[in-house]
Length: 340
Ligand SMILES: [Zn+2]
Image 1 (cartoon, helix red, strand yellow):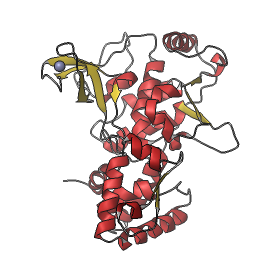
Image 2 (cartoon, rainbow, N blue to C red):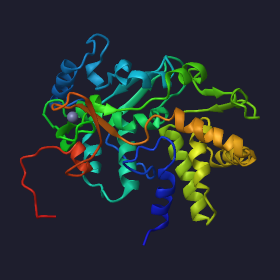
Image 3 (cartoon, protein in one colour):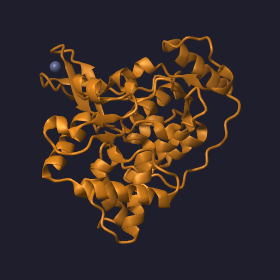
């Protein structure tokens, strides 16, 4: 029997920007050990990571463990962040790795929480102005990319490869896919749509250009912070035995601007958006459905790899043959206790 939460997960799972791997509940943020000084090993990790990546060595303060992420590595996805934002990452802390190791992989809420905890403690955004920008502003589709980046940084010394075999999507021969940040595959909105309707901070679209009688609309990219707010909101509703309109949630992730930290304010914001959503006629609804489908960057994690048989770019869904724990599994000399 499914509990309330699992049902909710399923409902929200279809929401835009979902990463398909895990649900999206964030609660009870676990306390991380504060990390002031890098240990000798961590310093070596950092050196190893830096020597492999194309980072310029100047301007990097090795002392505090943060290193800048080259935005070019995000490719086209970079345009969905403000140009002045600079991203930094640092290795997962011992505590984060402990939490990771202890997760129950059958609990999407735990997986989601652990993913977000890694993001929270290992991603920093510098806006180079006074605005306060944090990990919650990461676009939903980039979470897994950042997690893999952090993982590569954390284990820069060891060859902690994750590989699995799957049929080539082009020629059907079995090939080995390697899971790393470079091999993630993304689908993008049509270039002309981006050029015409992406303002640099939001999507601004006039339905009347498409023969739909409605005022211009503004949509905002789904972010980890918004996902979180919407889950909190939906959970509260479910607890009060109020209905949740799944279709509405699919649009809500795009229509909700920066969410408020005040739940009452959020409630009012969402109510207003719901009224707007309810007012759409069939034409507008169909139009919006097309819009959301076309501006989404792929909702599930996909990998690409060059096929050694046919030479084409093959794609496969990300999978973890030994479970998701392997992402932050550390090799130790200790022997495993028991068979479970
Ligand atoms: Zn092939």
